[in-house]
Image (cartoon, rainbow, N blue to C red; front, side):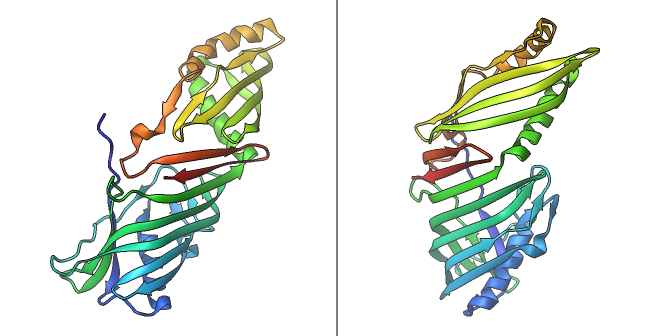
Length: 286
């Protein structure tokens, strides 16, 4: 399988040269980040950045996305990618890039995130219009991406999203989910036990259904959904459940390897899972 690539992210940083003062450079980087977040995004005025200059390059970037609201799948990247004029480039490494959000909201789910990346490859330079800018290099085998990504979200809000997705999948069957609750418990740092309790309705029939499964991660990137059990004390509701079984069996007991979707420069060393009232995952990149 051909490994996919991650497109380089580029941004203009205003009139050349690159500011030598941190506050001036931070203002330009803040504007650049706001320009990269396109689509159904609200609260971009809440974006803040702190930047430490390093001559013609940057020593560190710390972005705060708290208060940003994202609806739907977004595109990250400028409408017109920036590129330096040949001969003006400065190859560099940004030692520290961090981003926090407390929270950033995705489709109604408030997500707390903390990203720490080290040694991010970059090309600085000037363009023909007199602006300066930066191109962040795509991670590859010769320059892998290192760091950690930690995200958490309220379990109740995640359950609401899961319910909506399940209801959409069941819509063709005529089955309605009138109540739904899910509990995730950490069995160990790499395994979550998932229990659900739902009320299903079809025509005049209605009753409770209990379900259970596990989610396990191994070797950093291999996620396995355990066997799914669904049952109801009402035999008529069990008949309704049997209609939904084919939809579930597509995923149950199967392993999905995230590595096949990552380029060679992004290798997941570990994923630690968190259950309880707050769900979370901490990803460590090798």
